[in-house]
Amino acid sequence: DIQMTQSPSSLSAYVGDRVTITCRAGQDLNRFLTWYQQKPGKAPNILIYAESTLESGVPSRFSGSRSGTDFTLTISSLQPEDIATYYCQQSHSLPWTFGQGTKVEVK
Amino acid sequence: EVQLVESGGGLVQPGGSLRLSCAASDFSFSSHWMGWVRQAPGEGLEWVAHINQDGTEKYYMDSVKGRFTISRDNADNSLFLEMNSLRGEDTAVYYCTRVGSVGRKYDLWGQGALVTVSS
Image (cartoon, rainbow over all chains, first blue to last red; front, side, top):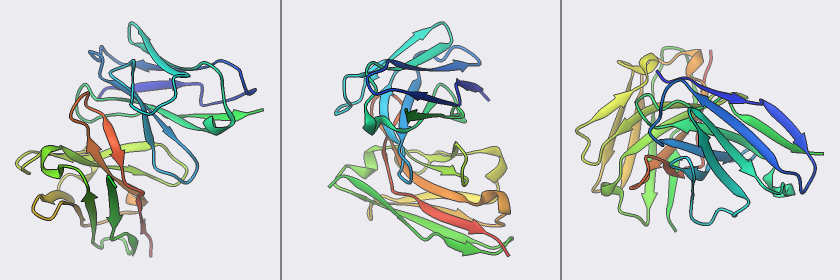
Protein backbone atom coordinates (compact mmCIF):
# COMPACT_ATOMS: atom_id res chain seq x y z
CA ASP A 1 0.00 0.00 0.00
CA ILE A 2 1.16 3.55 -0.75
CA GLN A 3 1.51 5.55 2.45
CA MET A 4 0.44 9.18 2.45
CA THR A 5 1.95 11.31 5.22
CA GLN A 6 0.11 14.59 5.67
CA SER A 7 1.22 17.58 7.74
CA PRO A 8 0.46 19.45 9.83
CA SER A 9 -2.41 17.65 11.58
CA SER A 10 -3.92 21.01 12.44
CA LEU A 11 -3.26 24.69 11.96
CA SER A 12 -4.74 28.02 12.94
CA ALA A 13 -4.42 31.12 10.77
CA TYR A 14 -5.92 34.57 10.29
CA VAL A 15 -8.37 35.47 7.56
CA GLY A 16 -6.30 36.58 4.59
CA ASP A 17 -3.28 34.43 5.48
CA ARG A 18 -1.61 32.10 3.01
CA VAL A 19 -1.97 28.49 4.19
CA THR A 20 -0.04 25.45 2.99
CA ILE A 21 -0.68 21.77 3.66
CA THR A 22 1.74 19.07 2.61
CA CYS A 23 1.36 15.41 1.71
CA ARG A 24 4.35 13.12 1.19
CA ALA A 25 3.78 9.97 -0.86
CA GLY A 26 5.66 6.73 -0.37
CA GLN A 27 6.42 6.55 -4.08
CA ASP A 28 5.92 8.36 -7.37
CA LEU A 29 2.20 8.86 -8.05
CA ASN A 30 2.31 9.82 -11.74
CA ARG A 31 0.14 12.86 -10.93
CA PHE A 32 -2.66 10.77 -9.36
CA LEU A 33 -3.11 12.97 -6.32
CA THR A 34 -6.40 14.54 -5.24
CA TRP A 35 -7.26 17.05 -2.50
CA TYR A 36 -10.62 17.09 -0.69
CA GLN A 37 -12.24 19.47 1.77
CA GLN A 38 -14.55 18.18 4.48
CA LYS A 39 -16.61 20.63 6.50
CA PRO A 40 -17.90 19.51 9.92
CA GLY A 41 -20.76 17.06 9.64
CA LYS A 42 -20.62 16.98 5.84
CA ALA A 43 -19.32 14.68 3.14
CA PRO A 44 -15.96 15.48 1.57
CA ASN A 45 -15.87 17.66 -1.53
CA ILE A 46 -13.23 17.56 -4.23
CA LEU A 47 -10.96 20.59 -4.64
CA ILE A 48 -8.05 19.57 -6.88
CA TYR A 49 -7.23 16.48 -8.94
CA ALA A 50 -4.23 15.36 -11.01
CA GLU A 51 -2.09 17.16 -8.40
CA SER A 52 -2.84 20.68 -9.71
CA THR A 53 -6.10 20.80 -11.71
CA LEU A 54 -8.82 22.82 -10.03
CA GLU A 55 -12.22 21.09 -9.99
CA SER A 56 -14.97 23.09 -11.66
CA GLY A 57 -16.59 25.57 -9.29
CA VAL A 58 -13.76 25.59 -6.75
CA PRO A 59 -12.48 29.08 -5.86
CA SER A 60 -9.19 30.06 -7.45
CA ARG A 61 -7.59 30.74 -4.06
CA PHE A 62 -7.03 26.98 -3.86
CA SER A 63 -4.07 25.55 -5.77
CA GLY A 64 -1.99 22.39 -5.85
CA SER A 65 1.63 21.69 -6.67
CA ARG A 66 4.27 18.99 -6.46
CA SER A 67 7.98 18.68 -5.78
CA GLY A 68 9.17 15.13 -6.18
CA THR A 69 6.87 13.03 -4.00
CA ASP A 70 5.81 16.02 -1.87
CA PHE A 71 2.44 17.53 -2.75
CA THR A 72 1.19 20.88 -1.50
CA LEU A 73 -2.27 22.38 -1.19
CA THR A 74 -2.19 26.16 -0.90
CA ILE A 75 -4.97 28.50 0.11
CA SER A 76 -3.73 31.89 -1.05
CA SER A 77 -6.00 33.96 1.19
CA LEU A 78 -7.82 32.08 3.94
CA GLN A 79 -11.54 32.79 4.20
CA PRO A 80 -13.91 32.02 7.10
CA GLU A 81 -15.74 29.47 4.94
CA ASP A 82 -12.49 27.51 4.53
CA ILE A 83 -12.78 26.14 8.08
CA ALA A 84 -12.61 22.40 7.37
CA THR A 85 -10.43 19.33 7.40
CA TYR A 86 -8.40 18.75 4.24
CA TYR A 87 -7.34 15.35 2.94
CA CYS A 88 -4.98 14.24 0.22
CA GLN A 89 -5.55 10.94 -1.59
CA GLN A 90 -3.47 8.92 -3.99
CA SER A 91 -5.21 7.06 -6.81
CA HIS A 92 -2.07 5.65 -8.44
CA SER A 93 -2.85 2.14 -7.24
CA LEU A 94 -5.33 0.26 -5.08
CA PRO A 95 -5.98 0.62 -2.24
CA TRP A 96 -6.54 4.32 -2.79
CA THR A 97 -5.07 5.74 0.42
CA PHE A 98 -5.75 9.03 2.16
CA GLY A 99 -3.58 11.27 4.27
CA GLN A 100 -4.49 11.62 7.93
CA GLY A 101 -6.11 15.02 7.40
CA THR A 102 -5.32 18.62 8.33
CA LYS A 103 -7.82 20.55 10.41
CA VAL A 104 -7.79 24.26 9.52
CA GLU A 105 -9.13 26.79 11.98
CA VAL A 106 -9.43 30.56 11.79
CA LYS A 107 -7.87 32.64 14.57
CA GLU B 1 -30.09 17.27 -9.45
CA VAL B 2 -26.91 15.22 -9.76
CA GLN B 3 -26.64 13.36 -6.47
CA LEU B 4 -26.03 10.16 -4.56
CA VAL B 5 -28.32 9.21 -1.68
CA GLU B 6 -27.41 6.39 0.72
CA SER B 7 -29.83 4.39 2.83
CA GLY B 8 -29.80 1.29 4.99
CA GLY B 9 -27.53 2.33 7.82
CA GLY B 10 -28.31 1.54 11.45
CA LEU B 11 -27.39 -0.32 14.61
CA VAL B 12 -26.37 -3.96 14.28
CA GLN B 13 -24.89 -6.46 16.69
CA PRO B 14 -21.39 -7.86 16.19
CA GLY B 15 -21.55 -10.73 13.74
CA GLY B 16 -24.66 -9.32 12.12
CA SER B 17 -25.38 -8.15 8.58
CA LEU B 18 -26.51 -4.96 6.91
CA ARG B 19 -27.06 -3.85 3.33
CA LEU B 20 -26.37 -0.30 2.25
CA SER B 21 -27.97 1.14 -0.88
CA CYS B 22 -27.05 4.20 -2.89
CA ALA B 23 -29.44 5.79 -5.37
CA ALA B 24 -27.87 7.81 -8.18
CA SER B 25 -29.71 10.65 -9.90
CA ASP B 26 -29.32 12.74 -13.02
CA PHE B 27 -26.10 11.35 -14.48
CA SER B 28 -25.09 8.40 -16.59
CA PHE B 29 -24.62 5.93 -13.73
CA SER B 30 -23.61 3.02 -15.97
CA SER B 31 -20.66 5.03 -17.34
CA HIS B 32 -18.83 5.35 -14.03
CA TRP B 33 -16.78 3.26 -11.68
CA MET B 34 -18.37 3.57 -8.24
CA GLY B 35 -17.04 3.06 -4.74
CA TRP B 36 -17.56 3.12 -1.00
CA VAL B 37 -15.42 5.12 1.42
CA ARG B 38 -15.87 5.03 5.20
CA GLN B 39 -15.01 7.26 8.12
CA ALA B 40 -14.94 6.00 11.69
CA PRO B 41 -16.12 8.49 14.33
CA GLY B 42 -13.53 11.25 14.71
CA GLU B 43 -11.17 9.57 12.26
CA GLY B 44 -10.00 10.01 8.68
CA LEU B 45 -11.22 8.61 5.39
CA GLU B 46 -10.70 4.99 4.36
CA TRP B 47 -11.29 3.41 0.96
CA VAL B 48 -13.51 0.31 1.20
CA ALA B 49 -14.39 -1.01 -2.26
CA HIS B 50 -14.68 -0.23 -5.98
CA ILE B 51 -16.77 -1.68 -8.79
CA ASN B 52 -16.40 -1.09 -12.51
CA GLN B 53 -19.10 0.05 -14.91
CA ASP B 54 -20.67 -3.35 -15.66
CA GLY B 55 -19.95 -4.98 -12.30
CA THR B 56 -17.39 -7.46 -13.60
CA GLU B 57 -14.46 -6.00 -11.64
CA LYS B 58 -14.59 -5.57 -7.87
CA TYR B 59 -11.86 -4.58 -5.43
CA TYR B 60 -11.87 -4.52 -1.63
CA MET B 61 -9.71 -3.36 1.25
CA ASP B 62 -8.03 -6.28 2.95
CA SER B 63 -9.97 -6.12 6.21
CA VAL B 64 -13.37 -6.51 4.51
CA LYS B 65 -12.49 -9.14 1.89
CA GLY B 66 -14.77 -12.14 2.26
CA ARG B 67 -17.20 -10.19 4.46
CA PHE B 68 -18.36 -7.27 2.27
CA THR B 69 -19.75 -7.46 -1.28
CA ILE B 70 -20.13 -4.49 -3.60
CA SER B 71 -22.67 -4.71 -6.41
CA ARG B 72 -24.71 -2.49 -8.70
CA ASP B 73 -27.94 -2.43 -10.70
CA ASN B 74 -27.47 -0.18 -13.71
CA ALA B 75 -31.12 -0.52 -14.72
CA ASP B 76 -32.10 0.98 -11.39
CA ASN B 77 -29.12 3.39 -11.03
CA SER B 78 -28.22 1.82 -7.71
CA LEU B 79 -25.08 0.79 -5.87
CA PHE B 80 -25.03 -1.63 -2.94
CA LEU B 81 -22.74 -2.79 -0.15
CA GLU B 82 -23.65 -6.06 1.52
CA MET B 83 -21.88 -6.29 4.88
CA ASN B 84 -21.67 -9.57 6.79
CA SER B 85 -19.88 -10.71 9.95
CA LEU B 86 -19.75 -7.11 11.11
CA ARG B 87 -17.22 -6.07 13.75
CA GLY B 88 -16.92 -3.11 16.06
CA GLU B 89 -14.16 -1.67 13.90
CA ASP B 90 -16.62 -1.47 10.98
CA THR B 91 -18.51 1.27 12.83
CA ALA B 92 -18.34 4.30 10.54
CA VAL B 93 -20.16 6.62 8.21
CA TYR B 94 -20.17 4.94 4.80
CA TYR B 95 -20.07 7.23 1.78
CA CYS B 96 -21.15 6.24 -1.70
CA THR B 97 -18.79 7.79 -4.25
CA ARG B 98 -18.59 8.30 -7.98
CA VAL B 99 -15.24 7.96 -9.71
CA GLY B 100 -14.87 10.77 -12.23
CA SER B 101 -14.50 10.10 -15.93
CA VAL B 102 -11.19 11.98 -15.92
CA GLY B 103 -8.47 11.95 -13.31
CA ARG B 104 -9.24 8.98 -11.04
CA LYS B 105 -10.99 11.20 -8.54
CA TYR B 106 -14.09 10.97 -6.35
CA ASP B 107 -16.04 13.82 -7.92
CA LEU B 108 -19.40 13.10 -6.28
CA TRP B 109 -20.17 11.93 -2.74
CA GLY B 110 -23.36 10.92 -1.00
CA GLN B 111 -24.33 12.37 2.36
CA GLY B 112 -23.24 9.21 4.17
CA ALA B 113 -24.93 6.38 6.08
CA LEU B 114 -23.97 5.64 9.68
CA VAL B 115 -23.34 2.01 10.55
CA THR B 116 -22.94 1.24 14.25
CA VAL B 117 -21.80 -2.23 15.30
CA SER B 118 -22.45 -2.73 18.99
CA SER B 119 -24.15 -5.09 21.39
